[in-house]
Length: 172
Image (tube, rainbow, N blue to C red; front, side, top):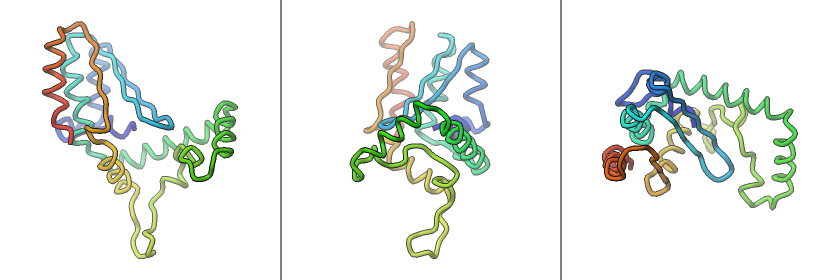
């Protein structure tokens, strides 16, 4: 999920979003659980519209820069290795292993260098780069009909609704 934070067509500079939030007393985070991915941020009220514009671009035209992709894959693998020692994570893995084999919960739920590396096509003839797989996943699942967004701020409801329409309606 953090790959989206690293640049878009409208805001191509890596970490533009994070820098904007930090410059305006803000922060952001994201997490993926077994059923969804959640992105959230906080920023000073006067900078809210600019943050919304930058945030919405993640779902309109992310860059998925190859150098960033490789770096983020290493971060995911590092997080996976850290989790191997966490009792709560290990208990969840036992629970998943006990689930019905055909149920999605039974599948491996995080990423590692082994699961995220480039793949060879089923015919064995073509290497499918991880970045291409990420982009295919993005195109399939990052669609307006599968998303929910909530804007919470001191602005009027009319203003928030206008920003929502302006910045999020271009999402495919």
